[in-house]
Length: 331
Ligand SMILES: NC(=O)c1ccc[n+]([C@@H]2O[C@H](COP(=O)([O-])OP(=O)(O)OC[C@H]3O[C@@H](n4cnc5c(N)ncnc54)[C@H](OP(=O)(O)O)[C@@H]3O)[C@@H](O)[C@H]2O)c1
Image (tube, rainbow, N blue to C red; front, side, top):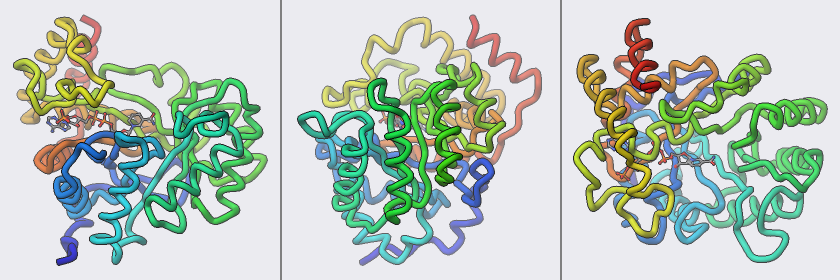
C-alpha cells in the first residue's frame, strides 16, 4: 500500500526562511549521502524517508555521486518517490549537485557548462523528475572561469530544470565572487551548503557574515560530524556504524582520536545536564548560528531521525552554556 502521510506533519518542526528568498526550509533537512546506496536495504531507506516526512522534514538532499556506487542514491530515491511520494511532490524540496567526479573523461567532473548541464540531465532521469528545487555546484573549480560555471547554473534555471541554485564548499572569497556574477545575471541564488559543526567551524571566519549580509541562507552539512557528535562512539566503534563500514571511506577509526573522545565525553555530560542527548545539543548549537537556516543531517535508522527532531523542543542556550561549550572545544 502506498504511503499516506501524517496529517499533523506540519505541526512538528519550524520552517525558516532561506536568506531573503521566498523559500522556507525545515530546521532539519535530510541528506542521502550515505545509507542510500547499493549496499543498503531499500526498505530501511523507505522507512527513513517516510518517517522524516511524517515528522515535517520536507527537504531531501542528494548529489549525482551519492551511493556507492555513484548514482545509486538518486536511483533509489527516485523509486521511493514514485512508489510513496507521488502525491506529495509539491510538498518536497529536492536538491541535487554536480562538481565531483561522476564519469570518465574530461566532461564528468568539476565545473564546466558541459558537465553541469549533462549531469543534471542524468540526475533528473535517475530520479524520474522534470525538475529539482535546488541545484548546487558541489565544489569550486580552480580551472573553469567562474563566469562559465555561474552562467551554466543560470541556464539550468531558465531551462526550468531547477527552481533555485546554490553553491557548496566555496570559501568566503569565492562566494563573494559568485554572488557578484549571479546577481548580475538575476539568477535565483539563495543557498550555500557548507560544512559546519562544533568540531568544524571554518565558516565562522567571514563566510557566515557574507551570507547574512547578502541574504543567502546557509544549510549546515555534517552537523553531527558524521556521528562523532552523538553517543555512537562513546564506548568504542559499533559494528554497524559508519566508521566500521569498509565501503564508506569518509570516517575511520583514526578520526576517533583520544582528543576528540575527551571533548565528546565532556559535551555529552553537558547535554545530559540540559536534558538532551549529545546529538540533540549539537544540532541546536548549529542552528544557533545566525545564517544557518537548516541543519542537514544523515541517519542510518528511523530512531536517529526521531531523536534528532526532538532536539527542536529545546533550542535555547544560556550564555553560561555557550561559554562552557567554547571551553570544552578549546581544551
Ligand atoms: N555539500 C557537500 O560537500 C556535502 C558533503 C557531505 C555531506 N553533505 C550532506 O550532508 C548530509 C549529512 O551528512 P552526514 O550523514 O555526514 O551528517 P551527520 O548528521 O553529521 O552524520 C550522520 C550520521 O550520524 C549518526 N547519527 C545521526 N543521528 C544520530 C543519533 N541521534 N544518534 C546516534 N547517531 C546518530 C549516524 O551514523 P551511523 O550511520 O553510524 O548510524 C548517521 O549516519 C549528507 O547526506 C549530504 O546530504 C554534503
